[in-house]
Amino acid sequence: MPATKKLIDEALSLPVEDRAVIADSLLRSLNMPDPAIDRKWVELAKRRLWELRSGKVKPIPGNEVFDRVHERFAE
Image 1 (cartoon, rainbow, N blue to C red):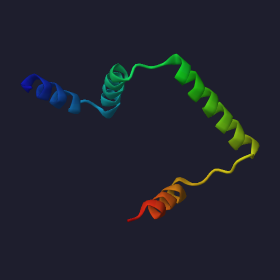
Image 2 (image 1 turned 45 degrees about the vertical axis):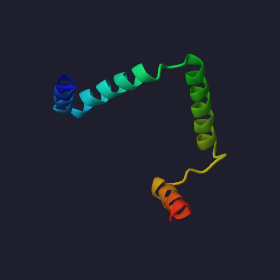
Image 3 (image 1 turned 90 degrees about the horizontal axis):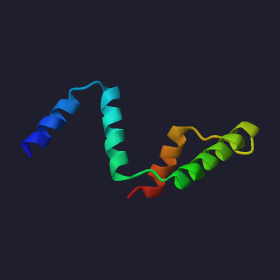
Image 4 (image 1 turned 120 degrees about the horizontal axis):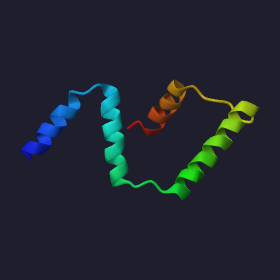
């Protein structure tokens, strides 16, 4: 594993943008993209964007969403 640790240390020394590209590439190699699923996500995203822009739904601020999650799952 020394080669792996060296590789990780080298990657960690890179700028954040380069690290993001490496992370994305590694994750994609583990979870190969499925074009059919990607199309479904695009359809969903477009529909949700239309709902927001048309006023059909109202956005909720992120901090409010996280407050609700914390309240719901508080121990």
